Image 1 (cartoon, rainbow, N blue to C red):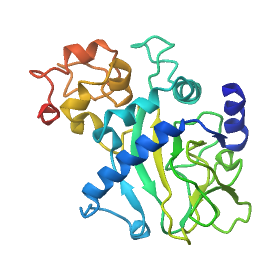
Image 2 (cartoon, helix red, strand yellow):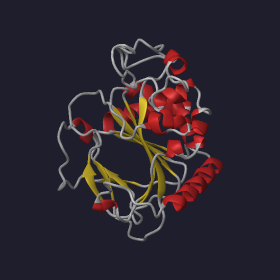
Image 3 (cartoon, rainbow, N blue to C red):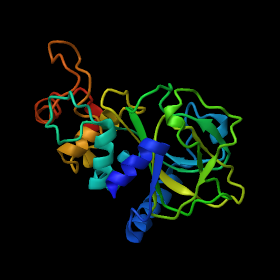
Length: 275
């Protein structure tokens, strides 16, 4: 099954895995998102674009609850991400281990229309991508409430989006479905016309060398850090923090041993993680 989904992503730029999350998990995650969103909904954030003024957004899920991190270590997700994003020249971890990282980790319920765009920042040709989106639907996604739209095979165009294209495919889905796409794919959302909630967990996963959108190692709360195993810490970027200078080490990429050597209370520079 996973091999077929990988082929779909290579051909079309995206795939859908139906009923990926069980109903119980969907209910639990949706409850957590609504709880944390209500705690933060009055907060003002710097740099919010005007197009997002009708969206509900909960940032940095990894800092809210360990359960969010846990869903990303599903074997199917790791297998797909490893196929597309693992660096085969990464010598500090065994080849079978993931060496990609979580780049952005939010929950979103869309409001305004979101024009076609790419998340890879620049378009380029070739089979290899360096970023992907993994979107877990927690509520029904329809044409009326602002579902995701894509342009099939546009990830291979090597071009920025043509906003006038008519070759649009709407991706509708049910709670528990997982949508995955190559970040070079032209995609956006429709306007949420019926104003119903459409929560989804939007996860950007990237190659280890892509700069994270948020400083996850620096901001991760101590109580969540302590719950994470080595794999989860590595996914959060703890094995690819640039060294302070050459006296510390000369490589950005590291293995699990760095977690014990440098990420302890005495030596770890990002002290606020241990508050």
